[in-house]
Length: 580
Image (cartoon, rainbow, N blue to C red):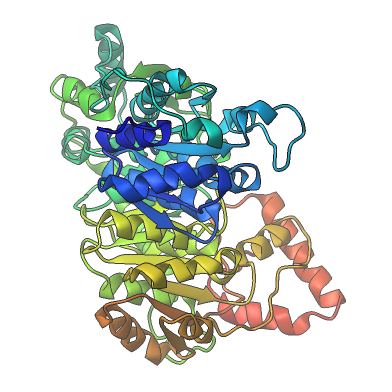
């Protein structure tokens, strides 16, 4: 039996750790590893057009499967392109191992062609980042990298010079002892006692949930029912808690809607459950706050706490709910539910009814129809910006659907590459990329990856020829939008030229039929929907400074000859434009 090379050993270790695909772009120093993958039979190489897309795809696969996922880049610029997608994966707590191949080991430190220092570059976006200098070092470094990625939920980076990858591997390498999954963390008895006392002392309790409540839906519902608590959520908590929830009062934050903000500010006790909600300006300052999180470094870093509880959400509630006194009054809960319904009718539903004749098409309407036509177990990947808003407000979770986005790192161009990873994770599951035209254009070349592999991803491009979120950001700062508009582009025609099906939609009456046609097609489809560039999104609560900034921006636009734009904006957002 021929002796293994270091590259073959690396691929073998990945396969034993559950890796199914390695996303990347081939090249020079990476060639020994790619060839080892070709011969392995256990791991597939997925050829993308840009390494950033490889990292996004791996991150999405890891988030959806819970397994370790992998990507790779060749020396210098190749692996450097991975960095943005790896930042996103790391901040999303996705277990990903990245291979950064390197220049010949005897040339390191000489300013050689394409020389960088990956073992330094990737430190900030990883739990573990090490250079393999000898074949003997490789097995333990890779196994340590795998344990860090899986055990700490994030990125590990292994830097491997191409000449080392081609050398014979040492015999008798240590068998990997893999981390199986995260442990259950129960709070200490003292913290449980203190949380029970806080709940019993409060007349009005509100629960605000993040992604840490994944798998704890039943426990949250039981607790809310016993103490008659409204339940709000952050964006990443939506898919895990909003469905089958009679206590739901919506979402708070920049993309928020409903009565979550009021429920958080009008209660006596706010429980932050499994959330690292970053927008402290939306958190109250005059109510008691308890926070429950499995990661102790997150406790209290956003707001001052009356109680910090180190434990996972499900186990904490299992300990607390049987011990708290049942509350009998529903007055606070019913008041918040009424406010929530009123807010939904006024804002969230404002642009989804009686808009069949509105041209350009309201993006809210597009998303509401997409929500109705998509499968009950669909995966939605969502671009940062206005697509985040429409997904947060108009997609309906049900416990089976998943929503993946760059919700912490906030990168543009994430949706389509993440859809690649999502579809490779399960070729039989419906995957929809909600792409802004700005984000799609950034990594448009990887639409060819969908075509090459016949991935049946449906890419819905919200084509408003602008960077809509940046428009809004400028306006609330009192600035007239500038540098945010693009020439009108027919992305459906581009998709057709790439070998996929492209569908152009310019009128509201065409939206449903176009989506049905796309979902019925067995391969990749791009639905290019021309949407209103003047559609705004506003959080449920805005500051007086933001209102003043909006008014100042509007005034400047009029003085600079932009009356037509303001008229169009007023027509598009008649119910939503803030008034000082």
